[in-house]
Image (tube, rainbow, N blue to C red):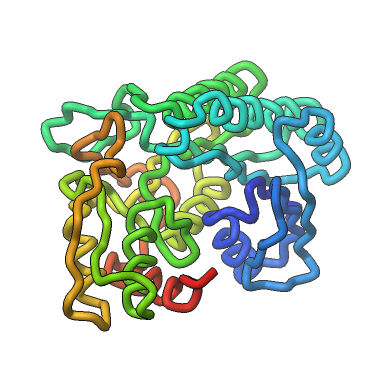
Length: 319
């Protein structure tokens, strides 16, 4: 199987590459804007890498025409909500125009290629669901620049399926966590601070934003397994929530991480600058469609995910 992975050097991209190379004998081409620090943990000769900007239309067309992928996992994105508030135009350019270039390239050169468009649960916005888990039939109401850009790509993907019968699959992915995630994301930020405290590089005080929000957290290793199941076992043109199906309060995750620490004197300080301009109070998903149609089930517990994240930062906090 010839597989193209965009954003291969990113958090999910690295874990997806490891998953695919462990499962089957694939030929993988990974593209990213910056491959300098790429390390999938797998040095297989079946993985080829190219630096490319997804907004460079001719470059992307040339890659698709030459490689002729059978599956595409489109993971590349500007995925930070906070960064999107600071840089909305760049976020839209990368996420929307880059995604359209992939769709157009496949339409022209590989119209039978299956493509998974990894979008986001941020598209749903704050939903008055009566405290019910969000399913794929809920209307979307994006409330930050990142979510708006991904909603646009979500719609474009559905239109390309309807208009051109391009075999598109769409995930609306909830929060991923696990080893190797950037400290721009909440649980990884906490884990890094704890690792710095343990090493004596930071005072025993964790700086935190809004701890009362409730989110759906899924281990990234379960998430990439879901992506593989969707593209192989899902239905074309369909949207799938990729999530744990459980809500977790941010403060509870911080408590677990602190309990895993080697220090017993850690305090928490609320930093208002870490609050979002608009913050959804409760968001968690219903994954029954994903399970029923593909047979996917998550394997990692929240404690295991957090412990692995903390251990990652214990080894890498000095980077």
